[in-house]
Image 1 (cartoon, rainbow, N blue to C red):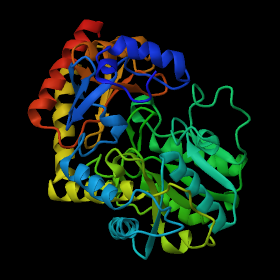
Image 2 (cartoon, rainbow, N blue to C red; image 1 turned 30 degrees about the vertical axis):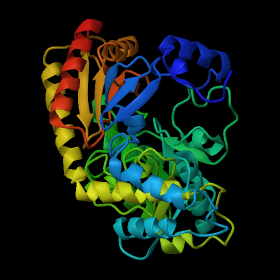
Image 3 (cartoon, rainbow, N blue to C red; image 1 turned 180 degrees about the horizontal axis):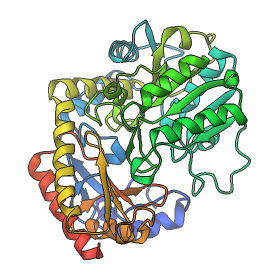
Length: 436
């Protein structure tokens, strides 16, 4: 078998590639759609059989600037013509420093900021916790039920969902605690969540031993649940009262996804550390942590780093991503796309009893499906059927939530209104076909 796929290989079709995947790729790697891509452009993707799909997934909220944006392609090609790797901790390069400067200037809150880069979201989370522990001299970390912070050893300990992320991998790392995340639709108020945090400090862990509290401004895998108004500010006050560092996991919400560069800007809150990934690289692998300079610089030289972290290709791409977001007005566009989608979904909710909630912020929208509209009876099978029916009709979506009963929509911020509307029409047809 040749190492590089030929034109004949690609013409073999999706089924042939699925069979080859099953024979050689670990089955633990998920596979939402039995398709193989041949090319993609902006908000569209074509499979190896030549079929076009409207992409409401964007590589799991990675391609915020669309697939193959010309500015990003040009930036990566130009950098590749110079060099593709030195390892920044061995020989530096300008794009790493320039990207750090831009993120530090944009990060919310007073005082000096610093940043560093890694390759994956899980790495950003793990290193933010490392920073917090070292800077505070404390060990414990508080996270939320339903949260997703990665599949690495610390990441899955922080993640607030057992199957499939924790089951069979125990014991988890110690000194990680979870409290409920507020969701009014599911009967968990902001006061309930804050009371649970008080009980945690009273009965399980001394707050003076807690290094950090990590929170997603909008829970992603947990069900596309935006933090209610006032919740992040309340967490900021709790952290300040006990000397705890507040870490915002903006891996999915950051870089324009919610209509602001950082989702915490909606709440007017300045975390001590912000974790970024996904949309930052426009499709290239990069993650980062940006935050208080005094906290990050508490660590000695050599305590942070990785061979490929903040690679020249990815930092060049990330600078182009920030340029595109600013110059093409994609923050406003994210807000407009989200409103358009949720307006269409609200109309669908009037016709389908199984739609129990429509929620989101910016271009990050969740459609919850429940049995008979009872939000306490998740319609997991129905959500899977809608996902499949949508793909059969040329629309790619994903599910999420603690019961995988939420259809999540995370399109490119460059998507045109006509494509949004076409996709929503397909989703409406998929709901009917699945019997929603």
